Image 1 (cartoon, helix red, strand yellow):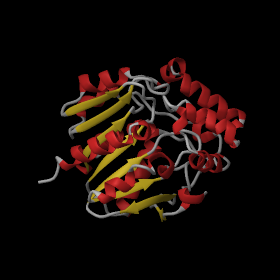
Image 2 (cartoon, helix red, strand yellow; image 1 turned 120 degrees about the horizontal axis):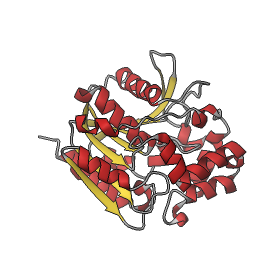
Image 3 (cartoon, one colour; image 1 turned 60 degrees about the vertical axis):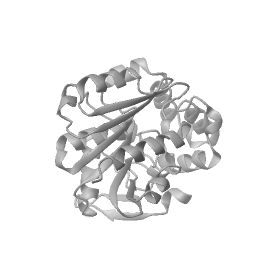
Image 4 (tube, helix red, strand yellow; image 1 turned 90 degrees about the vertical axis):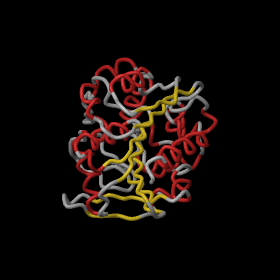
Amino acid sequence: MGAAAQGHTVRLASGLHLHYHDIGSGEPVVFIHGSGPGASGHSNFKRNYPAFAEAGHRVIVPDLPGYGASDKPETAYTLDFFVDALLGLLDALDIQRCALVGNSLGGAIAMAIALRQPQRVTRLVLMAPGGLMDKALYYQQMEGIQRMAAAFASGELREAAGMKRLLALQLFDPALIDDDTVAERVAVVAEQPPCVLSTMDVPNMAARLGELSCPILVFWGMNDRFCPVSGAHTLMQACRQIRCVLLSECGHWVMVEHRALFDRECLAFLAEARP
């Protein structure tokens, strides 16, 4: 799995083994990746998280269960399953308070952690998070999700060409897709059981957004094919202490298409928490 497998592995109290990267020192920031087939923490954020470590943060970049080099059990991949795993990782690493950075499914997980254990989350950075409308609506409305599910089911993502076609849907400019990311994801897909996507269940958390108590920074691309940009309005209406960056000519991966802006805005936002 190349660079994606270079890191640490911890056995949680549940018995699940999670793989993660852990670099830098200082206030902890946890990056939570999305649910795309073959995803891993490293492949999602490899061009971002080193800058956060260089800026004085301890950076934790886990592979969710079912992804990367973490265990991939035959089970139901519910939001609670992911939240339990991430909280188990924080417990294992004795991280009592941290900022969470989440993309897509990772954004939904970050919000759910902040709702379950608000005392643990200092700040939230959300990039086009899921969990803002009913699951059926995502599948009905979003071309990217429809094509992702079909491609995973057909097996075409086990080949580089098929994976590259899928990743092109994540970006406004598909020229930004690199061969290393394609190869990393193809290697992971070969190990993923069908239940990783077929049992994915993220409830609509819109009614609970007002309970989020920490400051929130949101990014959303206007050309997102996976999570509708209307979600930004949902968050802005419901949440306190929130700001939003909307970007034209940008798809689902803000951190890739606008890396410098994303890193700069995030680091400034995180710095506001410091005394």
